Amino acid sequence: MTNDVEEFSIEKNRLDDETADLVFRKGLPLLLDLYEKYNIKATFYFTGTFVEKFAHSVKLVKEKGHEIGCHGYSHDRCFDILSLGEQIKDLKKAKNIIENEVGEIESFRAPALRINKFTVKALEECGFKIDSSVSSQRFDGPFTSAAKEKLKWLFSNRGPYYISYHTPFKRGSSSVLEIPISALIIGYIGTVMRIFPLANMILRNILICENSMTGMPLVFCFHPNEVIIEKRGARIFRRQANIIKYLFSDIIRSRLKLRNLGDRALYLLDKEIEVIKNKRFRFITMKEYRRYYENIHSDNG
Image (cartoon, rainbow, N blue to C red; front, side, top):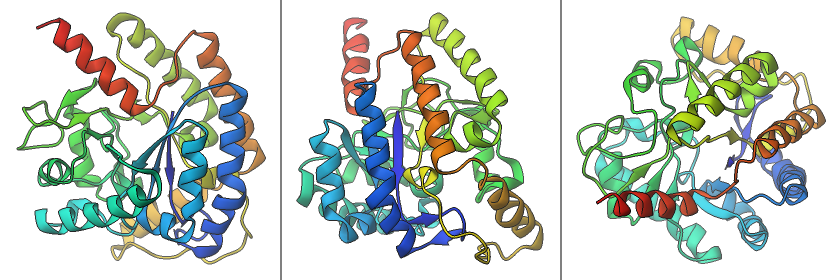
């Protein structure tokens, strides 16, 4: 179970301080209570800007036994358009902010899941050991930013792998372990669970079968802003200059993402966890999985 903690407003389609406050006061506590109900451990990826505003949030999550990861400094800074030096600067800044509150961290997930060929080198330089910015064989089409770059997901490795220095979507010799968000055309994520519950159920059953045959982990991605309700009627912020991208990514996608927020999202997540628990899956953090993965591959020579 993974969670991206940021200031992004689903209603306004942009970063928003009021949203951040709601996430801190309501979203995070609701998730923590749900995870405590099922006695499960998760990984929470925080942006540096969120921790600057709400330093107590990471301490609260860590006190509950969950892993703290990094989600970049700001959700507005997408790594796929940054140079190596810019990524290192961003990572160091975010990592220092978070580690000043909770100590050493080793897991990273890029804002908007956007990375490039420099990201693995930047992660190594900054001491990260795990990345989870790829969603293997997922296709978002025009409904996402950086759609062209994310097409490479369709040809990426499905299971965990050490990232190549030449492309983050292939197996290589770096020290950074990629643990992809589970997917098969559609992603195993809160958005799909809320908008298309039936499709999520079908995907989950396929992933469970795949796990029984290959041992590949299930990685679910959720956001605390999904369990809060904001004031409706706000004007959707335009992020895409191209009219086609604006129509699909900003208008249609944003309106779809408003479905089943708040208590309904929390209910659906509760039932999702219940199903997985009944299948006798163990909920562990990314850091715990990395150790498990390394032990298996060490034993195999």
